[in-house]
Length: 99
Image 1 (spheres, rainbow, N blue to C red):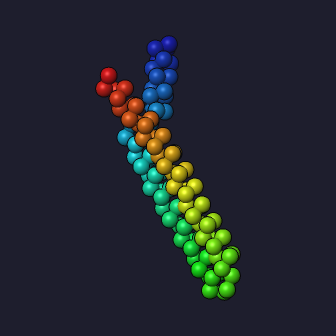
Image 2: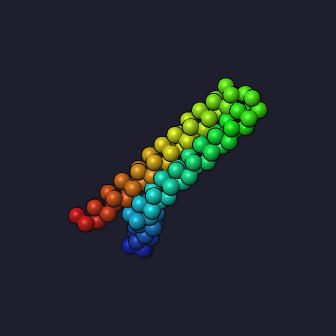
Image 3: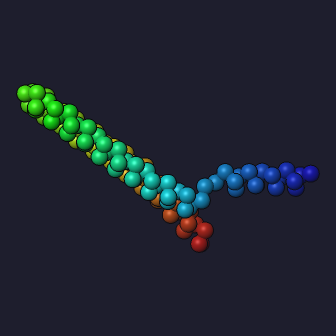
């Protein structure tokens, strides 16, 4: 009975771990999602800025474009950091299996 319980515990621990390829793939997806979200933020800011310039509010237009650029930078940075962390973790798992 003790061997069975030990086997169940070890199986549960192994099942809960993620594979190296899953980490690397998830990291690449996070980087791509961050870049896509950043493009959306930049486009949103540019659109609002263009509308403000057309309605003769150039200062507010510049503010909106700036907000879009800041949002884009934040989104890209967050996605890149999260993705890189996952890729490094997955690479570490793969190297650990080799050695």
